[in-house]
Image (tube, rainbow, N blue to C red; front, top):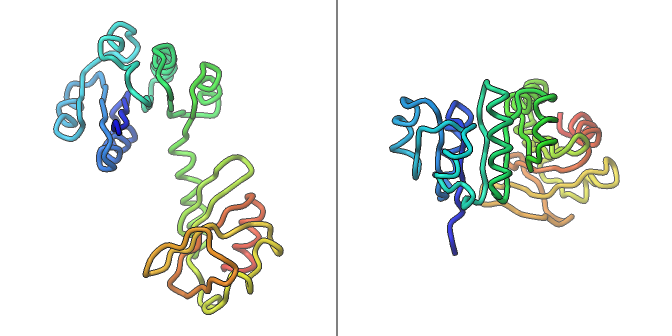
Length: 220
């Protein structure tokens, strides 16, 4: 089976971190940046790295970007270059284009030009860290949409030995446990009879309000 190929435009902190992780996961990555020093630094890490102007249609076409499965516009501080790059990647016929947005307005523009997925790294990380600071048992927090959240929570001592049926999340709060991470392994789609221990981590999905109520009433 052909290995998926990604192109990452902009190798700043976000772009380089993303590109390195894709490489670590076993994918091929072409990195593009206008800074020669950055390209030299990443040349030993990524599959291919080139110095190019990401707003130059001919330059991008010569790199064969239309043959890549997914393009990520990770430009950090030049909104105009970000939008132009996204347009060029979409126009090339690339299957999927993801772009980093610096603000809600920037994100709306990216959506208007056809970007398949807009990400807000700084905003999302701020939300996650804030929730972790006020909720010691909350290990991770990801907004799936403006209404739905998936949260990773450490099981407190008072839930030790209780089954999911005992807690009855779905009836009491409307949310669901989709996985239990135990020291001996992960249980995906656990049953009502599965028992929690203090060392477990549960993954819960629900609306923002449901998650907040469950965390306040049961986890804290």
